[in-house]
Image 1 (cartoon, rainbow, N blue to C red):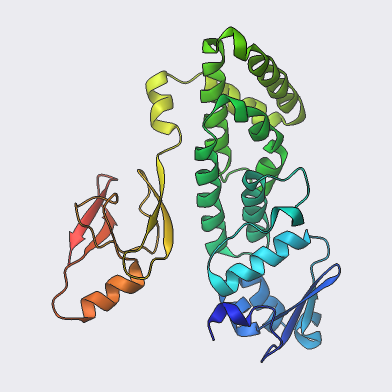
Image 2 (tube, helix red, strand yellow):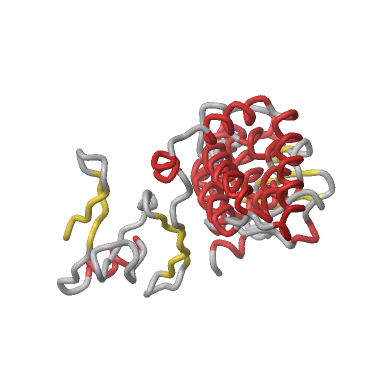
Length: 286
């Protein structure tokens, strides 16, 4: 059986996470390894340790479900959209998932959710999507602490970029421009932090804005185990070791587990990414 098959499985379960009508059967050793919060709940002498359960009914059940699944599978999958509130899009889901991961100190999930959030945002690079972006501002801005810019900067940069394109729309698309103006005005009224951030983003020099805008994000498949990863121009994902064909992340690659197996075989060659003193990513041949 794979580790993921033990999620919400009573076999060898020694802890229960309750959320509203659901009772998730989990394992202390797994949730403790993934989360400092749950490790303290299981070992810190609190009532949860002796009752062998914890109640998270103050949180949305679809977020608790996804967070616990990540602890077993290592992937952040969107639930069936029928299970999500009508106001929540994929963009809002990943922002909210980063928020609950931060609350319960599941650090790996924060990074995973942020990367998926940026990928979804990259797919929305059209002015027609501004309404959806703006509708998710409260969720995005409430997800992570104010000093954590991993969600805030991408969304404000994206909105500023798309807003700059509005005057170029033709007469037929005038209704899109009008709706975007109205939606932006409402979002600015509702959230002061967003208002200041988007003003700064709109006032950037075009070249500076281009450098800080959303990078190109690709979903790449490991050529050995076929697991998918998200990579971008400015970030070689933490934990990934690339076996690069053309000395760039755009080439075919092996993930960290697969390349380590290759290194253990007869004289295989790979490249390990590291950040140099110049702040740029380089590849060390090993």
